[in-house]
Image (cartoon, rainbow, N blue to C red):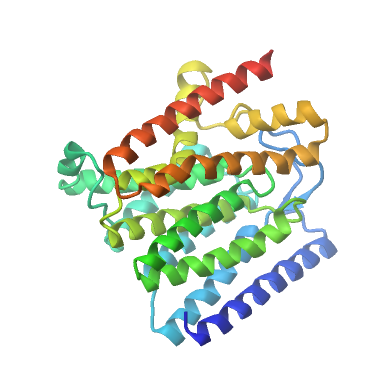
Length: 353
């Protein structure tokens, strides 16, 4: 990294910290309720005091500084990041401002925006590790549908697990560190740079969110992180063709399978709408299990994030070591999905008993 980039890193960290501090003080002083999360009755609420959902705003403002710096000093335009992040930040902010959007309408809007953005940015997935799927991807309409589905899983997965202090922040941090390392070794400097800057922003956010949450990401922050992960994963996969596509599935297995498993569980087993939240997601079961042990809500809140992300790191290490081995990654990904189901069932039974 050039000397000027190092200087910018320090400026970015200072700016991100100050804007978080200033916005938090302004909201606390004016007692603004529009961005305050004070609903303690919803299934996914595990906090005990009103907390502002301004994490998405602070991350987006920091991203603007990054985009401006990259354009004026490095002559780089991250158009795909700018367009996706702007649209989904606004979409998430609408919900943070308590403007009620029905779940089906929100999904329709997300899908519509994704179709336009994917076409305009010429996003595509070259290979999947499965021959029949690669053949289907040669059909334009199927390729568009597949990429759109990938984005939806990652974005909604990010929003779904954003329920405890540091859970999504730490989880995304791990993913971005892995992607940064891959691109740094692969000498993909433009990708490594933007991902490194994102890592710095998330680290600053975690200062205000973990272990004691002064601010929440909100839907705008969760959507932003989901979009950043999705774009970075696809670009990294294209820039590093020697890495097995199933390695990136391993890296995303928690975000992806949390959405997929929850949809199936609610629709076919709980007999309820998959579009509405409940209290039986994996991270919620882990929280209930931890709470039974220590009886303290705040400690159980952030310990849940630590436990889940610690297990996640341990589970992805084999995939990281053999990321170029397509056969290993394929079967290890299947092993992770089966492990998730087994662990979920075991935890569910313990909680119910």
